[in-house]
Image 1 (cartoon, rainbow, N blue to C red):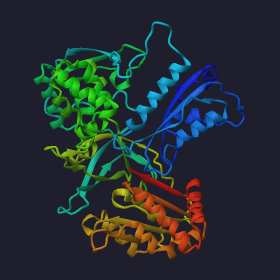
Image 2 (cartoon, helix red, strand yellow):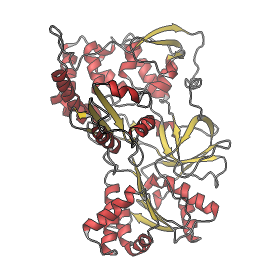
Image 3 (tube, rainbow, N blue to C red):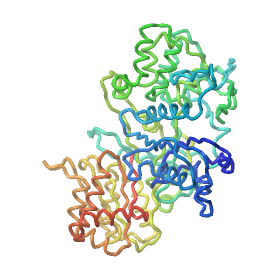
Image 4 (cartoon, rainbow, N blue to C red):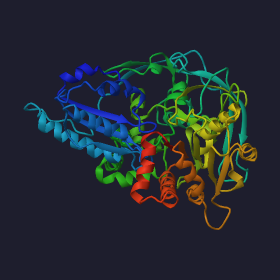
Length: 553
């Protein structure tokens, strides 16, 4: 939205807004300037005379679900805009992802637009499932350079952002026992003077595995689509859709397969829509039509989403469509690999020239024969000492207090402890870590997955933190962090009474964030003698003032 000149809003008759929410209910980076201008107090209430619709893309595991979209919708109405249709709140937690809300919302949008702006006589509306021509034109030619078995040169090298830098893998330590079902590792990356603060995240752009790339290239070859790895792709725009910077210079097919195409992704509905237009098999057409229909969404979920079937595996199941895939269509059906963010688990002051990340290696079984793996976690897990990768640092959602007199309550089960290790190590290095000021609730199954145990046990022994552990598999009754919060309600209420206390919650979402919040509400009721309404209001006020922050995934 920041690329749009706000002055032009005064001339528009109808505008569709689509926005996500980041951090603690904040607008995304590319909306900040636009939003700041829209919030100016001197704007009149009759400024906007256009119709508008807002679609939010969010995650209901966060307390401030789709908060940016809700605020935008409200502000546009305050400035005189007329709502075209109700605010759409898409939820990535839904079994069908955003599509569960986006598809019916778009259907309603089209109906409204056709009523307000009917087409001239003789013209019929485009079908929703109609496939447009590919966005870009692709021409290819062979390079003289042949690939060895090593990784391809970085295709982002000439276009990477100015904040990007190279790190070297210095140390990899498994933090769970070999017998434990999950492989979690503390990875230490060597830097050269790159500064950061607690709460920051390191961003990494992963690559597809050699095995997956080989599977994809062999699959294409077996269907008469023979694109040698050293084939140069030259990509130009065919419609009013600019070519992304990494594709504006020559790239090889091997680079695209390793670094750009997200081959491990589970395809969404549009993917099947494109295949429908490519296949000449009646059997495939019947199945694809079912998958893109509203009635077939449960079948699509059971075929694709539930077993986490990736793009390469799906293409294998539709050979008649696959044989008609061209180079330019590849960019229509395969999304680019998205960079991944990891909370920094180290302190710039305590760990000079190092960045630590706590990595849970994602591997699991579904009904499919082949094990499912996470793209980025397995990319990092397969790195070796001395390997060099490109990363950059950005601000995370956590904003820790700089006031060393403030009390801090940290709730971090599992790898959720990562940002808190950064904060605690920083306080220790500054000499301000005190058990009466830092209370850390950590949760895990038992000693076998107590990450960084030696670090935290030492800190507790030296009275630099108050460490309270919840082990869910040690006793017959499962004990979680929310239970430990209520067990220590007297201690917590003493901190709450000072009115200078912050709460930070991090970890795998599911039900944990809400259950932890309810536990803090119960602390207010039990020891603060508050009513349910007052206790809810107390915690809600902490959320509004930035004293209760969550970071879940």
